[in-house]
Image 1 (cartoon, rainbow, N blue to C red):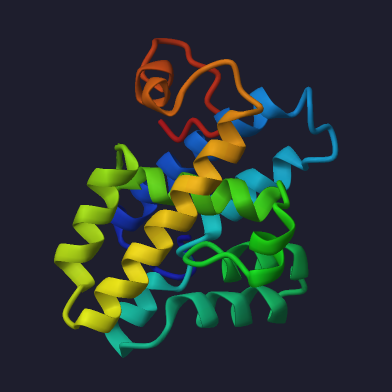
Image 2 (cartoon, rainbow, N blue to C red):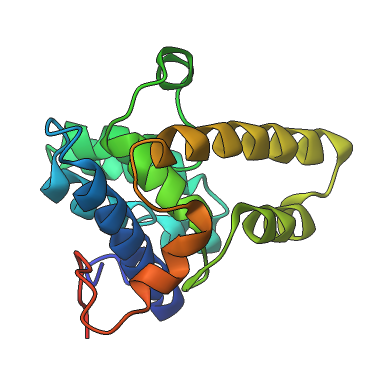
Amino acid sequence: MEAQGMLPRIKEHSFQVARVAGFLARNIITRRPELDLALIEAGALLHDIAKTECLRTKGDHVKRGEEMLLALGFPSLARILSQHVRLSEEVLENNRMDEAVLVHYADKRVLHDDIVDLENRFDYLKKTYGRTPEILERIELLFQETRSLEERIFAHLSFSPQDLKSLLSKPNDPAICDHT
């Protein structure tokens, strides 16, 4: 993060995404022991690694971040990063539950550094990026996919999506990433 000159607000967002993804993973891992908790944490922390650069260059932060991680020899992290905005068709079609799914979903639950519900997060996306009917349609499709994904994830959990923020705001919560 430091080497890439990541803006503080992007760091804070990434730390919060890591907390959410890690919390979900720790609660799912008893039913899905094949999940790699360290990979989830690293993927969440690095999912926006190229965003600061791409704000300056107007490049695609997903593609640039994936290229960076591949060049550094981290293909598993690159795969997670490449899907943090939109999951691959293979993952969607096969209803896979893996590290990329949890990082992707956690990113959709964090607006800046606040844990929000999907409606608030997608309202923000529509207002910020929905410049054309085509883009608005893609955002709506992503919202529907993410809502379905949320149902799949929470089928493995003993709490609801509405509980996530309050569970993570408790003192001494078992957050995977404590950056304070």
